[in-house]
Image (cartoon, rainbow, N blue to C red; front, top):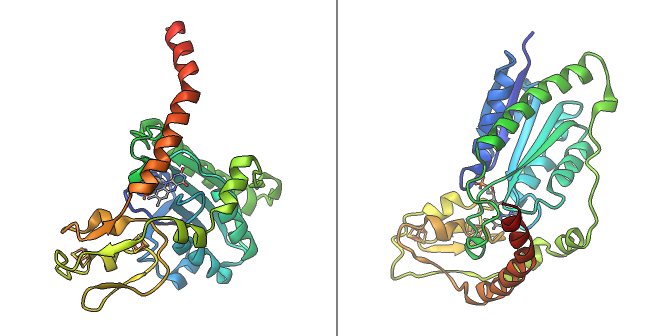
Length: 278
Ligand SMILES: Cc1cc2nc3c(=O)[nH]c(=O)nc-3n(C[C@H](O)[C@H](O)[C@H](O)COP(=O)(O)O)c2cc1C
Ligand code: SF4
Ligand code: SF4
């Protein structure tokens, strides 16, 4: 009987969605079914009907955002189901896949694999870094398709041949950078990154910001007000048709300006080296 799979993804700017679609194409190319659903639209109890469950997310501040983490925390009812994880990131996914896999394993799911793909980073202060421009590209999407095929193969090995030794370990990495990423908790992000303000003169109370907020942190009353924890994704700033969400990026951009100078200084010798080799 054909394998029934589902991919649940969160995607703000479309990168993770592209990868999700490519993985689904890979799964379908093996004559199995794959349904795609967004995190917002997923009906939890329906997940029981699937043999294989994939979960995809962008990386926010070196980890999966809280809406994805909270979703994983509710999956204990899927104990013993087979799953896989994937993420897209601008340049540093840190331990995102390992964290997601740990969350799933703690709820009793088996994790068949993980895929991390670059995705263009439109986070305001980063846009001038060019690590991720053009991603996910054709090559990335081909890899995602192959990953989908591999998940079907791994499913067969685990389910039919009971080969549990093919399950990847998802080891946590502990370099200096990874340790720094542990420091950046959501509380600290909240404390140190610029606040979101609403300019009531320009706001038309259209509700778009509340509709798209991944942590349901905005309520219309009748103007947008904060009702929960803001994860500082700044997507409301991007989508507001009136430019009424105001963020003071000044200090953050200045700080990142120093990083950019360091980044260029570090890369310069490599560029010269490459130019000589051309
Ligand atoms: C608020 C925010 C924080 C981010 N933090 C990171 C990060 O820590 N590391 C990284 O590599 N990329 C980071 N990114 C880049 C996104 O992970 C990347 O652009 C991703 O592909 C976006 O996926 P989407 O288009 O599906 O929303 C961040 C983006 C945003 C908006
Ligand atoms: S999206 Fe902009 S205009 Fe619409 S309610 Fe939010 S702040 Fe106001
Ligand atoms: S930045 Fe805006 S969209 Fe993102 S979590 Fe905060 S209030 Fe919601």
